[in-house]
Amino acid sequence: MKIFHLCICFLFMSTVVFSQSEPQLRKLLRQFPAADTNGDGKLTAEEARAFMASRSRRGAGQGPPMKFHVDPGWSKVRFPDNAVCYMTPAEIQALYRKVYPKDTNPVFQVPKPEKALRIVGTGHSFMAPGYRTFPVIARAAGFEQPLRTHTGGGITGSVRYKWEQENGIFDFANKPQPKLLAAMATGAWDAMMWGPYYEDRLEYYACWIDFGLKYNPNMEFYLSDAWPSLRQMNPPPKSEAELSAETFARMDKEKDVSLEKLIKELDRKYPNKVHVMPTSDAMVLAVQAYYDGKLPGIEGINRWLGGKTYSIWRDKLGHLGPGFERLEGYVFYATIYKRSPALIKGEIPFKPIVDRNLGKLDPPRKEVDRLFRRIAWEAVINNPLSDVTDRDGDGIGD
Image 1 (cartoon, rainbow, N blue to C red):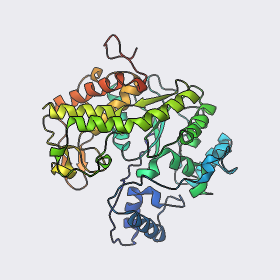
Image 2: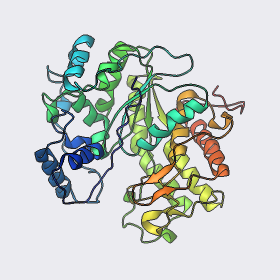
Image 3: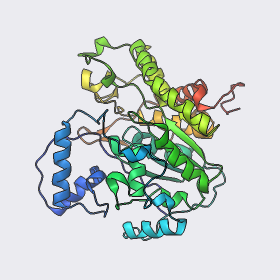
Image 4: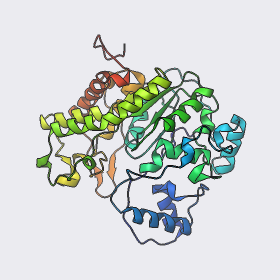
């Protein structure tokens, strides 16, 4: 069964000249699924050219848009009548098979595991590292993690974009891709995970929650808070000498203002249903640990500024440096299962770290990995929006 459907994309690309050979088109499709505008699983030369032109217009290397057009249909009481969410479960699954004919054994329903929660998720490249490591961590904790995701790069991984894409509405009119809706409609899923995006609104999340609860009344929802980015600094820093632990703590607080407003709105509408996975708090704690000299082997804050391979972040946008995908996965695990990753015994067999430009890289040292586990739990239990506490300090949520 194909449970781990992970689509890991990049937020940006520079303009390149490419051949129209089938291998090159397949490679481009793997990197940028959003280029497949008709959702048939095959990238044509015309689709590739249009996609490259749109990226070029947006500005190579500038990152995902912070301001963008939103269809006015989001302000209406009801989505278009052809939205997939209004179909019956049988109709949604039949549509999935039509849209994805090559998926001969689609997984819509997963039997209730003894220990694990069955999870679906959306997200962009800030979520991708955690989606890779979270199942590995769960396996080390003694169970297999059912996880079905529908992800994309930048704005294409946002909850708004994925809802339009799955339902075949607005910019995706009559081009539905119901990867998660087909599964959720079976009533066999326990939780959903999301990554945030600029200018998120209550209604972007409410549609997912309403659909999930319709078929899975006990479903819980988890929103990552991402982490500070150098994009928040104006003017941008010219060297790491301009940065400090206090800088990142301040940016974290600035970023959290809009998130806290959104969570309050969601809590009023869906009491005790939405929880925050405090990846930002964990990264701020990691930055403090770096300045305190507690991250041996980590050479810098940001590779874009300092040029050091083993940095906490690797670019201006805020993609994680090598090894920090573990920390995000630990935060996911700690929040959802309300258990400290430090309780997991022994080494966890993460896959080797391979950078597409630098090749195979060294994993974090053992003492750094152990610190990541403790940092993740500290971040989770000290953030009230996670809804996880550990008053007796035994590493297990109260």
